[in-house]
Length: 413
Image (cartoon, rainbow, N blue to C red):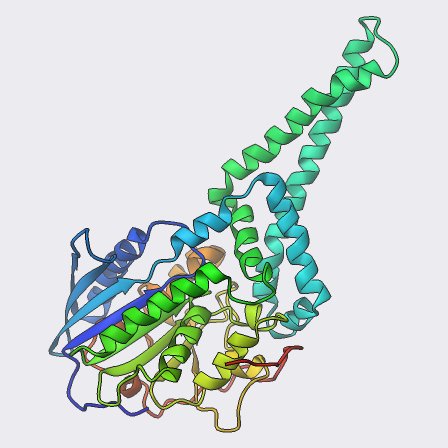
């Protein structure tokens, strides 16, 4: 898509769709403030953030001076954290039932095997909560056996004999095992086992279909973006991070299908970051997402740039989400697939400090690079150039993966 104006961007509306995240979106504002200041210092421009009134939607305003141009950017976080928190309000037993169901969905459908063909990193990330939760259960069972045996041994000295000993030991042993599981759950803010299990179970629970409560929220997001497209901004930029990327794909597809992208309105741009689209599009009932991938990949109403990095083990790095899902049409033009190249855009010292912090690296796309190349999140969101012009003529990475790998390719609009 070529931009609708050759003039520098003066104003921009940015809509950020987070991934499966239960935490208050305030942290996204603080991340932008902190990392934007770093990038501005490194790259020689200025950013100034101000918050919005509390009675408005959550977001912030940015006044930037980049390449000699002043730009105003209005950033809004499209929230679905309440839905995430609701899906996470599970008992310990329910979490283990989720584990069994989610594992069955991915294994029985063949999705797990096919995902391994693409990238082992995100699949290993998906297996991490399974291994961690099973390990916690094993430790709880071990403590249960130790406590039960110890109590039986002690009670035997009181003269009690027969089956009563086992019954007297059972309850405290069960309590001990349960307390181990409770302790691990209380530490999940560092272990992420329960959190990741809920994340994968959220999509697997409906075999890839969009849950009704999320579908309704996505429709609300679409209305908000459609209203912005009727405004006077030079560009409306939608940013989908992690699982927020496949939400954005459906939202934007619905906007275009229903004719709510005006021909002479602002430029419409889509930036997908650290996407995990195959984790959903490879599932049996993800026919709507597959249809949206097929549809959006041909449209001239928008520009779509997909940015990942092999150093991010939680994303399907350089996997073209349309092609690997097996729904690429012959006239496909999107997305442009490029790498953030962490090993080249981060200094060796910074890379070494981050390379084993997997979840932090999954958010690096929203952060500063101390050796920036052609990807700069802050210039994209607050700079004077629309996404389509910034990457005009850019071809997808030669090392991208674009081989159809999904076992399910049926689509619905």
